[in-house]
Image (cartoon, rainbow, N blue to C red; front, side, top):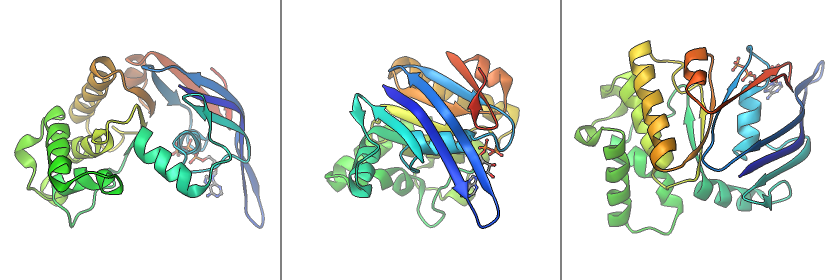
Length: 221
Ligand SMILES: Nc1ncnc2c1ncn2[C@@H]1O[C@H](COP(=O)(O)OP(=O)(O)OP(=O)(O)O)[C@@H](O)[C@H]1O
């Protein structure tokens, strides 16, 4: 499903060059739930951003579903990303001026969907995360766990095959964190979503199919 071949990422500033990723080779199968761990600065977010086509590698190739994506234009990448990939971030990234339903509908605005269909899909996604009763609330009226559930609904509303989650439980207490983890496990189980999750939590990682550890930009496990 996702295939990374010899991926390297270099960041250059005036004074320093950082090798954020060094020759990463990784294949993630359809329906797999993979976690990525490692110390701060080891390249976890960079890896996720490259898999999610938000950032380009300095070297190497990415294939998703057999399609090589390294040479597509920004517009083609955006279209591919919108259709195939849902993102979940540690700090939720919700828009505070929009209510819950409108936040969840956002990814569908870039598609050819009617307003009625958008509403139906967003309501369905909110039902899956158990938030049907909060559709008209605004993000500031929600708890952290509820905000993350809205973010998950937004990530899955377009029915992407891949979900990329960057420390999705990092800002939550253990009870809310476990709730979010259960929702991700359920999506992986019942919808066969392929999930890659960055986490600092060994217990969460243990619940996934496979763990990849990074250290200084290299894969060590
Ligand atoms: N835009 C950038 N410009 C320069 N260096 C960068 C940039 N983004 C990341 N880096 C460097 O690349 C390395 C990897 O960063 P990355 O954010 O991927 O680490 P991480 O493992 O996700 O860390 P954390 O757990 O703290 O979020 C770090 O040394 C970081 O300083």
